[in-house]
Length: 216
Image (cartoon, rainbow, N blue to C red; front, side, top):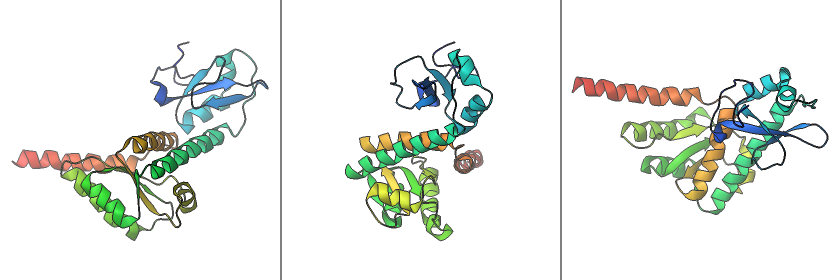
């Protein structure tokens, strides 16, 4: 078996598209997000669906060719670790000045094209989202970057990570620390099933551009 072949799909992929697992001294299967734990590892596509399937169908035992212990909460454990990593990277980005807070500053970062992504707390209201969403659409339609928005965390989670209070909207900026945070946000979003509404929005913008070209 190729070292980077998903044990569920049997397809090879890049490391960032997979999660590595190893067996601990107690025979427990544990996630190795940093891919640096010792011992033979196996790989699973980096989303909750495939990890739950690997656990439910006893595929870890088959991959490791031995009896292993798979926690029934393995999928939730991976989610918590990915969320912790993403929030940690977000905190570092804030310290490096690569995060804008508050609806006004977020909208400005989006319209200027300096934002890599936008974060909304789960508690964010539709009214609070509207202007920022409009700014993201306008920026993309004008030929600027496609700036995705994510609702991955609660207001409490964002406030603790960013050292603020009542953090509802934040933008991660296009700097090194911001790109590190972006990578972890994308990984967490992918693990939780992705953001099909975001892809649909930008696909619609592309269709509008194509229609405009046809008219010309």
